[in-house]
Image (cartoon, rainbow, N blue to C red; front, side):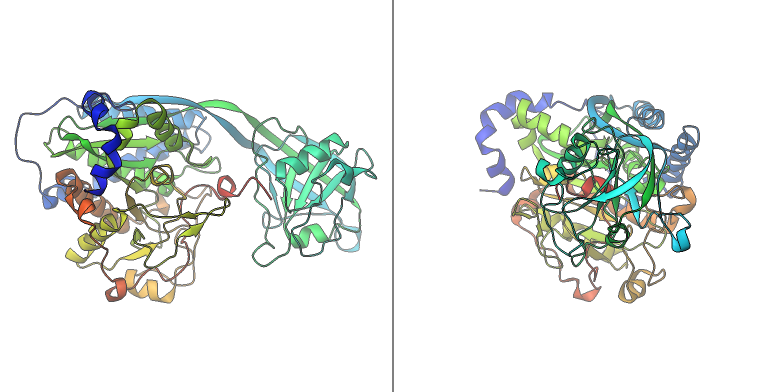
Length: 529
């Protein structure tokens, strides 16, 4: 029995009745019967100029809306309206799927002023202090008081119990150390004890010395400022002294949107899903991350409009990815609960998140785990690529090889919108050109660019504008995306045959751990310790 057939066998009786009514997408009008496009034809139809035009509009939207397209902001809604308008003009009938999510943003940058050399106060740098997601607001000047920590390099229980604050002086700023309970629990206990603000520094263990970019887990848990510190900045305050903490934040529930649309032809029982997140981080316009993926799949959708394919193709622009994959999670959960047969009909999911990095590499998700072992999860399991994912990886590598381009691999970590799909056993894959990770000498030899610097040196920063996009890399990746989308729109047989990815020894693999993939590091940071 084929993999896809086995996934949907339990729902076969329902599939016939429900496949044409899959929630979350509305089909484009069926075209007259004709042969579908060739791989060469679609890569020619998806021009770099079209993709760049979409990026220019997204940048203009950000600049007209305080420099951001983050979910929950007017800039994001304008981005949704643009995508919907283009889809309708191409003949699709897109659906806007609304959902509520926990919104957080800084009205102004949070600051922590501490005692400096010779008694002169200094402000901690962004490498030393970062506001916690869902922090409260306020300006506080008060003595700092350590709670159940001596700065030993351990993951202890500082601030995890109300009893830890028995000797705490109300009105002080609580200094806690990251450890075995959640940041939210620590901050709530500190506020209950009368703290005017809370500072949480890192453990100092290997890999845990940098600033803590944590989250309190939900809006409204505390009303006081909560800030993460590096291990060095935290231990420097163990002797006490007066600090000033200033935070102005917005932390509330807001509504955001997914956009979905699908072709009018092809088997709905072998639906090819193609997705990219549409939102930026609050700090910038998000043109590489992820205007490039959004613009790329929009151009592919426009090229496929009115074409006949063997399999249905459903396009998705996700909201609130930067808040923790919330849009794709909402969509998959809705299918699982309300129409499981429709979820079974999703033959594969292709994800495009950051495909125009300025110092780019041509990275393919490692669907056979040949370059990177399965990533451990906080629950003790691993993020494992579902059967069929290796064939998707192989398809991308084959395309790059056919046009004389080297390709490497990136960790199959679940840190972008394919995560909710692989959790349900849907074969997945995609492309990525690199984020905050550092390009190696080997990679520079394979892909060009500069070794020793980040793939995207404006990752999650205000400078992530259209000047931050490598147009050659974007064209190469968009061509690959178009070719592989069409390949699976024509047939998904190779998923069922268990095709394996080729040995990347001929072109070199990614050569490093994760190149900086996916959602905001703050959203990804475990809400626990």
